[in-house]
Length: 479
Image 1 (cartoon, rainbow, N blue to C red):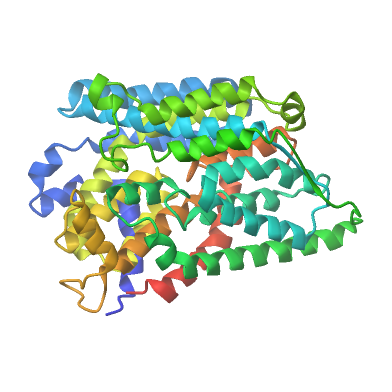
Image 2: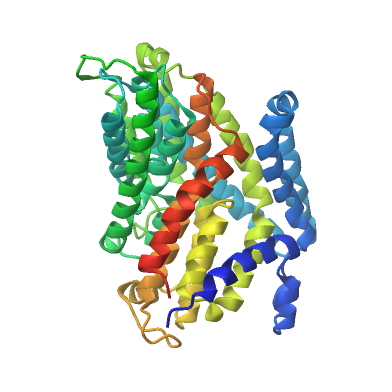
């Protein structure tokens, strides 16, 4: 039965969690014991404060922010780390797990950043609405093969060079929408949440078999809107079109490094049975996969073609900012994720497909979408009486089983909703997905007029993405 009230419920629930906290809800429903193991509500303040400073710092106190954002990020992270380390029973375990996740994250994005910086792609053709639209569509497909981070780092510089002299803020914004986020929604390689689902037991080709139609519809909608905006900008400029044609690539050997990184993603005990885990053997916070990625980054930089680095104006500032800000985000969002995870686990039976879709999406826009995906995935499995720790249960859930409450709704629809929302809604803010911030920083360093955090949200993501996401909900998840 379709439940239109679920949309309102999901939005109100997210707002309630943010403003009031979820512990009273647990107690009210007999979950007081579980709530005792949760962090206090006030510990979410460092995360909220960091988000506010990321949003307002470059706009209102740019000089202070530019020189002190590492200290701010590390300082707020320390507040949460100290509390968890000394005040929470499970604190050290949580901090260790978060450190492992952060090192895995920074190993991937930094290695892809360095390797792509050594590949200079020159497309000898001026950007037109059609050419730009084709490049964005190609980037969306490529993101499923080398990840959203890999596709973003490989294509953002050629995209900017093609449009030199006519770049507008919307060019960068739509690149983030399509290449850095939504494009990677078809395969486990594309985006971290889908890869985690694969590690838990979701078949590799399940996503593309179920999500291809919503993905295609979304990409077509956004590319079409982009081309209309680009055509209007071209008419106002009256720019001449270049007669030059052709593509040249400097630093082709770096594609070998890129292949090594993609292959190393699968070097995980959960994928390859018996594969050694340095975390278990030596209690290290990183594994063989991360060591390979860091090694590739060093080797790629030391052997990079100087012409490629120079042509790309390569420097480490964008990845430096990502590294410092995300260490703060990873640490400060621990309490928020635990509260949200507990709420999802105890209230999943009440959630409809609509609620799962909008709540997963809303939270993936401001939190790390990977743990958000896992929290709601676990909640949806629990609603069907299944356990995420059992790969057979996960496969059964993905293949489709009738809901014990809503007999006409298959479990696969829930997984579709969670998968799409966790990936697509990452485009809602700069912190929704790692490449968002990196693309913004690379563009800003090149002198492009990029929107600040708040402008990105109110001027672009809300008016452009929410209608599209609303259409997806109406067509596919209106239950």
